Length: 163
Image (cartoon, rainbow, N blue to C red; front, side, top):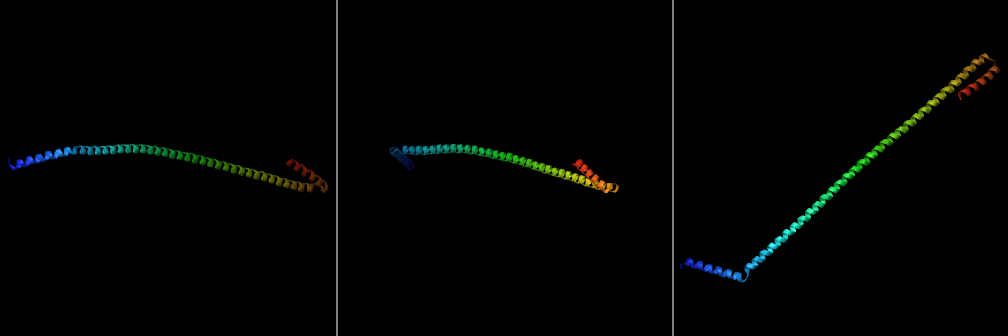
């Protein structure tokens, strides 16, 4: 045998002895156990990640639901505020119209009163002028005593007709 074959034989023998010793001290079992432990650890981590993902999905769903509820509540509040503002505006408009109507009626009453006072004043002036004209006319035609009696009766007659 030559040196390379001999070296190959010794390398093979050494390998077989090494493998025998490795099997004897249960290295493959230790390796399998280590791999099983690592696989179990990875499996547990994957399960934990799946559970955390499901929790996150559930929380996301809850928050989306709460957000929608909050948006709906905000929309309801805005709608209620708009309705209340419309009611307040309508009430203010009605109050303004009522105020203007009352002020107009009051002004019309004052105008009517002023017209009645003016008519009464004109009548009083006309009576005074008519009485004075009648007195002046009668004074010239009738003597003083008869004129005074006639004037008094005419004055009473005119006052009775005016009132």
